[in-house]
Image (cartoon, rainbow, N blue to C red; front, side):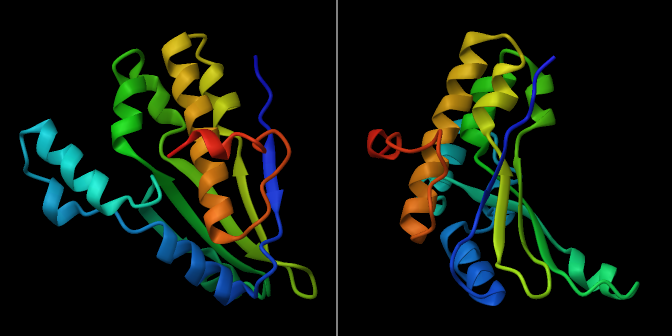
Length: 168
């Protein structure tokens, strides 16, 4: 058994600004360029070129549009963010690691409150597999997340601080 650690930060921007900043920093998965390839080296080259901050968006959902029909006024975007090059390093040890890869992130705002960005701490999710190689990638994802937050100018939660300088 393991406990998740939800990291919640306030970007200090409006909802629309936070969404725009995040989506600019984390580009979409280039399906048109990658799907159909049979050479992992080509996949790696494309991914390294596109994932400028180490992550790609595989999926996004405007939950507020659907929930607004029920009268809920909160704003909310849900994302799957990750990097298949890192995921493969876990997959080879246990394909069930895909339960947490890509990472789920949320940008939300309850009416009258601050905008929030939330994610579960990757290292805790992946350490739960009890495989050192998977846990190491989880710790690497913590550091990459810290770097992304720093580049966005958003606060870096305790537990990720000081690690960003180690990721290039």
